[in-house]
Image (cartoon, rainbow, N blue to C red; front, side, top):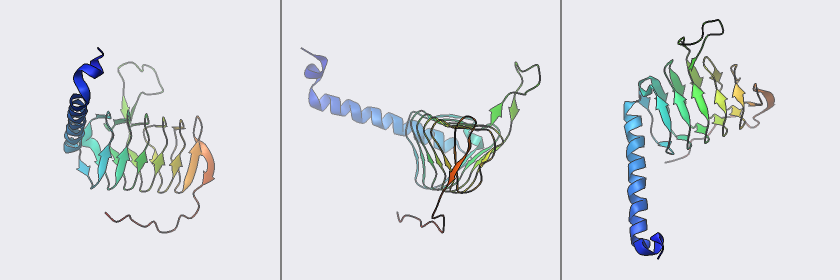
Length: 173
């Protein structure tokens, strides 16, 4: 007899519900520690947040699975922002000069409103991602991104622009 058959549908459903509740509780605990949290912020667990007291989140933010946010230098994420799975946004790095071991440098990171950061993208310290910009999957952002610009590659370079970038209507909740 298989485990699935022994436990049966109702037990598996209950287990799934309990695991879902644990993930929601973990997300709520992270958000409760943040410097600011807008309405309708969704963490698709598991999400790792270092120094949540230095993280500010706007309204309607969706953060995908396995995202890492390192906010030690101050991380601000605007409203209507999408961050896809496995992205890394970090405000901490190491100096270019020797010695590097044991040495850290923090710099703020700003993600403005209406930004989409693709799966597996990395955004490094001291960068601003302008309003309406798109960071392609797998891109490594080492310099600030202008508003309504699409960047891709390693290091990230402009590859296009977001058209129809007039006033963005808010979805009614």
